[in-house]
Image (cartoon, rainbow, N blue to C red; front, top):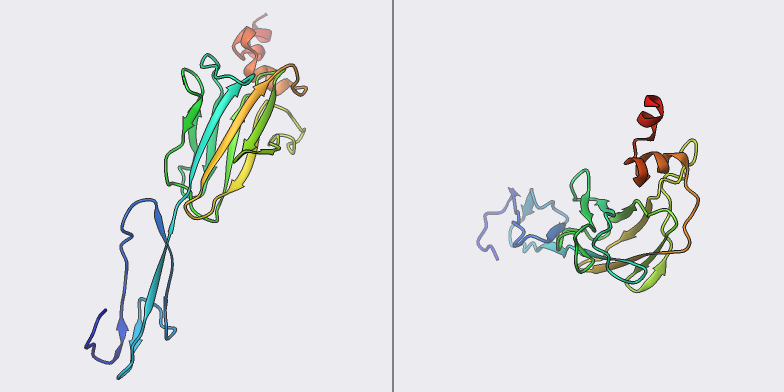
Length: 202
């Protein structure tokens, strides 16, 4: 409380967010004044309210045929508001428990985020659950010209204040979708993805 203020306009209030993992989401005053220019009249009491919102979190557990396989090099990328422009990237290679760490308290409440798996090995399906509920991932390359399937699967989700979202992804076979030539160019293990150079050399 600030008492005994001289009646005038131009008082300014600001808040330093107390800890990381929180956002200042609103700041209002009872008389309609902006917090950077509070107008206090004689005998008036103005109440200004600052609202902080806790950020959410994201964890992902990856399995193959129901078990953790740390020999597979599958890349997951998390993108969205407040994250690095390239997103947060994590690989399953040499990950013994299958749980990928994307940080804690770094997702802004009310924002939409995208998690992508690349590549889903040919012949495998990508089965996703979000907070224990089955969801259907999409192929982000299906809308290209021409449409392709490069083995990438993504899912969009939002986060509420302080919410911890948990995704489980299992690749299992037999199954899988047909792949376009772009997949084999980039991911075929036989030639390390260098088909174009090999063909030209031959």
